[in-house]
Length: 250
Image (cartoon, rainbow, N blue to C red):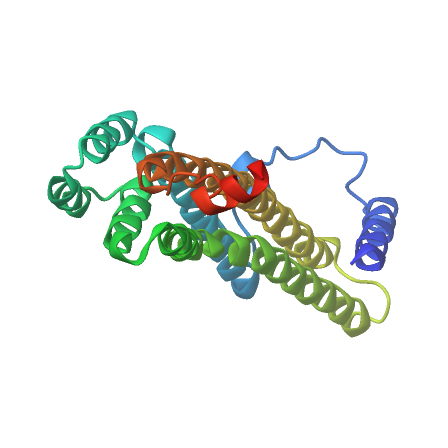
């Protein structure tokens, strides 16, 4: 990719040196012509596709940033309500409350309460398993950001290679003396598609990393809160039996 850019820069310099109109007034080029358009149909398709991917990236980042909030996954009201119900041994009410709640913490508490007849260790295992399931369920959609972040530079590189091929074919067809305008069209396609590939990839990968770290943080915190909720089910520590105590006294 770097070699292609170097060759493109060399062609641009040669184009400027050979252009007969270099001494004339430069023609104004709009922003849309520089960054949003390509004379090549293939280059234009790639640019439009990358622009659509850019819009999808922004929409996904906003959506999941709103979804992965503490108030959404670990609402304080849910923790306080479940703590009150479990401390008061109102287990049926707690189960019904968890069934109506769709938060991350509610799912962990529901899994733990259902395993209450099997003992405290079973409740701990249920919390860990439910946390894994919920985390996987939430992580799966944001993988699209990772896919977009890795695919968009490849599309940009495809446009770069295509533009360089067009430029070199024009160079060969003209016997080494190409029309500057035709040669610049291929180079422009190569550079603009690379530009849009990077524009899409950088926010997509950054958003994916930030959202994943946020979800990991809230998932770890939910485990701590769920452990606190089932603390009343923890068996009390027992001391030595009477027989052992008498033997020790003797």
